[in-house]
Length: 189
Image (tube, rainbow, N blue to C red; front, side, top):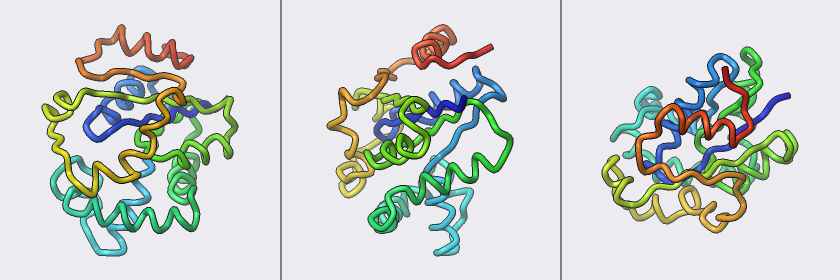
């Protein structure tokens, strides 16, 4: 049975890092899906930008982040599941895997779409937290219009609404990753 882990957290709290560590441990039985990929693909196509640079974790993406947020919010206002659906259609068109790790869930409607589409029994929510000083050490600085808008804050009031919350302030060893997989009830080899 397909299980989908929805991973959320603030910028620079380690969503990609944890997703990649989980995928490495699960191996070919998992796939990372990023809701941001169809957003960035359409934005790059629309403005004739460098898609690889937009997909990276660098300054190029930051130049366009605010405008991408505004545009994607306009799209979501018409169809809240648009980007979730696009990301999953792409992922499921490839080889099937029992586990999907969605590494960048940012809104209540993202969670809603996955639960409505796949059923709540197949969806697990994982919230990553990191102290501001940890995030700063990873390169984060507060940016008005980015860190104080729904793409960053919509899930803040769901503290009790996640299946699992993980503080990600220190390097997680393999034992911690295995423990996380056990808590998520995902089988690993």
